[in-house]
Length: 373
Image (cartoon, rainbow, N blue to C red; front, side):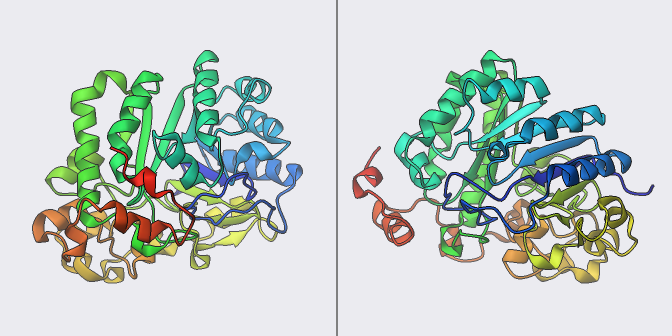
C-alpha cells in the first residue's frame, strides 16, 4: 500500500449545541441527511485500520451529541488505533467523563477562544460555555486524560492570546494548538487576522515555547502557521507540503471523504462511503490528485516562482483555496521576503470602534466589553 494515513479526522456528527461565529463547517442544531449509522461507522473503522491509520480524532459538530460515541470510540481502540476528541467541552460532565475515560483517549481537545468569559461565550454563541470549559479541564485532569486546547484566532480575540496562556498555565493544560480562522462557513473575510497579526501569532508561539516551555508539552500552529524561511522553520519545523490524502484523511458525518476535514469545499470530496467503501476510495489511483499528483504548475501567485515551491506546495490548501488559488498568502517566508501585501494587512491593532463595526452586524456585541483593558 503506497499511502497510509497517520491521522483520520472524523466529523462524527454535524449536530452542534453551540453556534460559533467562525465555524468552518457551518454546523447546526440538526443533523445532516444520511448521517452514518453505528454499523456504518464500524465498517469505516475497520477500513481505517486496514489502510494503516494510527489515530482517529472524533470531532463535529459536537461529538458528545452522538449517543453511540462510547461504542464508536471503543471500536476504534479494539481495532488497534488511538482515539482523540475535539469538543466544545459543554457536555463533558460527571457522567460523560466516565464514557470518555473508559475509551482512554490520548488527548481530549477543547476549543477556547478567549480567557474572558463574556468574549468566549460571545464567539461561541451560547452563554455559560466558558464555565463548562473550566469544568471540563478539571474533570479531564482528575481522570488523567490530557486536555488539549484549540484556539481559533481572528481580529476580535487576537489580543487574548497572552491571557489564554495565563489561563492554561493556571489550569495545568500542557497542550495548545493555535490556528487562525479562514473565510469559510460562517466566518466573513474581513474578520480574518491580517498578515501582520498572523506574523505576530507565529512570534507568540515561538516566545511561548522559549519562555514558558516548562508549562507546555507542545504548542503548535497546526498546518496553517509556518512554512519555510527563518521564522517559519522555527515555528513549524520541517514542512513538506500539505498532508491531505497522503498522511491524513477526513470523514464527514454523511460519509463524505476528503483528504483533510478542513477541506470543506465540495471540490475536495473524493467519494462517499454510502456508495463506495473508505478502503476503495483511499486506494483509488485517481483520488486526492491535488496532492498525489502534485505539479508546480498547479501553484499560483507568489508560490509559482518561489524557490521552495516544490517542497512547500503552496502551504495549507484550505487557506489557499478560500483566498482564491493554490498559494497561501499567510506564509512567513513570503512576508519575510516581501513584507505585507497592503496597508490594511500591515495592521496589528484595531480600535474598539473598528471591532464593533466588524462584529456587531454578525451578532450583537457589548460596546463596554471593547473598552476593557
